[in-house]
Amino acid sequence: MIGELRRLAGTIRGLGPRRTAVAVAALILVLGVWAAVATGHPDMAVGLLAVLLAGVLAGLLLLARRLGGLRADRNAVRDLRAVLDQTQRRVVAAVERERLAAEDRHRELAEAVARVQRIADRGVRNVQVAVPREVEAAMQLFQGFTPRAPMPSSGDFALNPTDLLELLFLVRTRRPRLVLELGSGTSTVWLAYVLEQTGGRLVSLDHDPEYARRTREALTAHGLTGVAEVRDAPLTPVELEDRSFPWYDPATFADLSEVDFVLVDGPPAATGPDSRYPALHVLGERLADRATIVFDDANRRDEQAAIERWIATIDGLSREGELLGRHAVLSFARPAALAVS
Image (cartoon, rainbow, N blue to C red; front, side):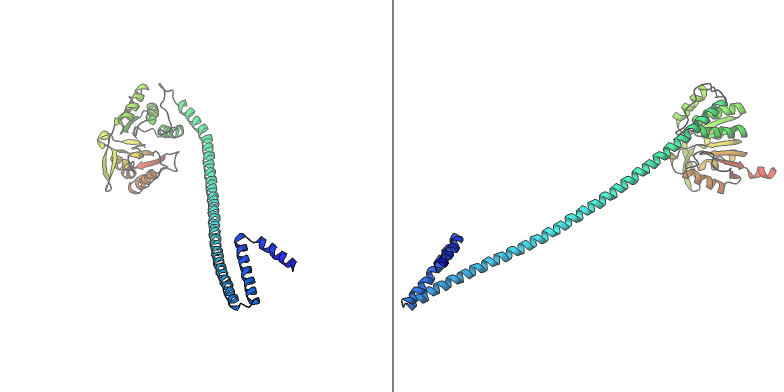
């Protein structure tokens, strides 16, 4: 009995202050009920028992409230876990998207670097091929004559040595009497030297007064004004096939006839689409019965289209083989002349 009381006392000591007070009060009520019954006071025992039951009921209500709070806390924990799981899934999805995007960017960057490398390699190969070719062409150009002044630079907008060599070869072999050049520049000086040797004459048109002035100064420096002249030819509207084209003013070459060699190197593409298309339609009546037309920059789309339309619409015009460098060479033979021959 004493041992059980000690264990009960130890259990009571293990409770908190509030629980200890409740337990002591309950114990006192139980002892009170027992004492009332033992002493023959049933009314007092019933009253104490009622108080004890009320305390038990209050304890049950408090316990129910605590359990409800625990249930609410459990629901809150479950909701929090759901939010955390959803957030985790979103974070993982975002990280995966960024990883895939990074892989795509890395692949695109690698492809761009590879393209640049291929272009660079191709450019290096082109330079490796072009430089010796242009040097060889320049050496051949100067073997034909000795310039009387420094020659203007070639390349860029001007003809490069290879194209110049091919152009001058045509002039030497066909020996035209009158060459009309559309667009003056470096080629004007070279053509004048060759025509000085072959006995021909050169007229060059230029819409840019500054370019025309520079070319005239170069011809003067080389002593070629007796062979070649540069005329200022402003661009004016030329009506052709229900279209208006900015082209050289026809009044600037109205005195020319029997032109047997034409170099089409202008107007520049910047003046508008199909800028060189009017050339043969305007010059047709001023051409000799047989003439050679050299079309520069024939590797460009507008120029290729102009050549095809010329061949389709101008009688007696035909293409001579494939492109000669960046030149297309056309032959013109007036149908009447063909009939006589």
